Amino acid sequence: MSRRIKDEIIPRIIEDNSEELLKPTSPLRSEAFMMLNDLKSSLEFGRSAFLRGISDSGPDLDVWDEILFSVPNEERNWLDSPWIISEFYFYRRVMEVFKFFETQYDPFTKQKVNGLLEALSSIEDVASRLPGLLEQDVKVATEIAIKTSLWGNKMDLSLWPASKQSSNSGVAETHDVSYGATIAAGRQYLLDDHTEEAINQLMKAKASGKPVDVAIIVDNAGYELVTDLLLGHVLLALNVADTVTFHTKAHPTFVSDATTSDVLYTIDALKSSQDGVTRDATAAVANTMQSYVDNKRFRVVDDLFWCQPTAMWDMPSRVQKKFSDSAITFVKGDANYRRLLGDREWPLDKPADSVLSYWKPMPVCALRTCKAELGCGIPVSEQERAAAEDPNWLVSGRWGVVQVGGL
Image 1 (spheres, rainbow, N blue to C red):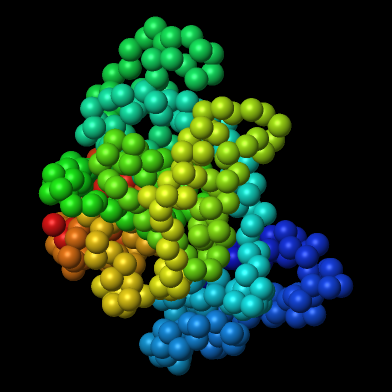
Image 2: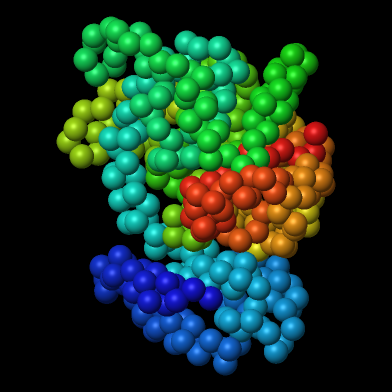
C-alpha cells in the first residue's frame, strides 16, 4: 500500500474538509475526524491491520464482503492483499467516514474544482481550435479527438488544426497545419496502436443505418474529463454517433475520478467565467454540450461496479446490459485498464485482441497511458525501443496504447 495515502492523501482530506467537519451542524462532525485518524493508524500497522468489512448504509456491502472474503485471512491486510483490492478498499472506507450514501458529500470536491480551474487556459486553447478540427476529414478529426482523449494535457495542441477564423482575434489564420503531423506526433509514443480499427468500427456502425451510441468509461475529472467530453462532441458534430454515454463512478474514488455530478458540474461551470476571464470558445462548446445533455444525446450513467476492483470479465449482467446498444466502448484510465486485464501479469507481447476477446457483443477500445508494470499487446521491438529511451517506460506515463478487443 502506498505511503502516499497515509502521508499525503489522508492529511489532505482532513485539510480540505476541515471547515465542513468543524461546523456545529454538520452530520459528519462527531465521527469523521476520529474515523480518519483510525484509518490512518490502521495503515501504519500494515500487516497487523485486518481489512474489516464496510459498515455503513451503502448498497454494496455484500459485494465488498465477497471481495474481502476472496483474500485469505492471513493476507487480508494492507501489505499482503492484492494492490487493486486494498487501493479501492481504502477509498470505499473514506466514503464510510463521510457517510456518502446518506449525505452525498464528496470529500474530493475541492481538489477536483481546483484541477478544473487550473486547466481553463488549456481548455480555451483546445476549444478555440475545435471549429478547425470539425472542418477536416471525418476519420482524421476522429483520430485526433481519440488521441487527445488518450493523452490529455500531454497532447501538443499547437499541432491541432486552427479554424479559418481565429476565435480569439477574429483574424483569419495565414498558416497551414499538417494534419498528418498532428497524428504522427501522437503516434511516436504509442506502443500498440489500433486506432484505425476503432474508427472503422464506428464507420461500419454508422453505415448500418441504425442509431449509433458510443460508450466512454471515464476516468479523471478536470482537463481529462473535458477531453472525453470533447471526444463525445466531435463524434456527434461529425455525425459519427447519435448519442454518447459516459459511464461514471457511483461514489468518489481515487481523489480525482469523475462522478455523474462532476460531469454535469464541469459542463455547467464552463458555460460562464470561473475566474473573471472571458473565454468565448469554451463557453460556446459548453453550451453545445449542455444542449446535448438536455436533448439526451449526452447521457451520464453511474454504477458502483466502477468503484470496485473486480475484473471486467466478471462484470455483472446489469452492467453488461448498459453496453449492449453501444457500437464501441472507450475505456479510460490505468485502474480501469488493470481491471480489463484482470490485474494479471500477461506476457507484454501477448496480442491485446486475444486478452480482450471476452468483451462482447460490441468491441472495447482501451485508451491507456502506461503507469503500472503490466500490460499486453506490446511487441518486443517496441518494448526495447521504449526502454532504450526511458528506463521507466512502464510507469512514467509517457507511453501509451490504443487497443481494441471483441471485434
